[in-house]
Length: 65
Image (cartoon, rainbow, N blue to C red):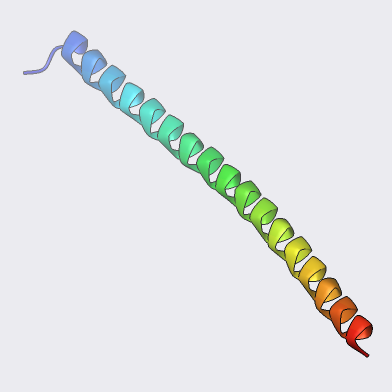
């Protein structure tokens, strides 16, 4: 039969496991936010480059005409 000490030890192990799971979930959320920020930065850079290329292409045709 389990003693009070055994039950307390098992409960403590469960609580520690739950804390680890919560920490893992928080880390995953932070990593997801960092990836979103990186994606937004890359998108802004690509849009900026596309606008520059469009302007250069238009300017090239203005010179030729």
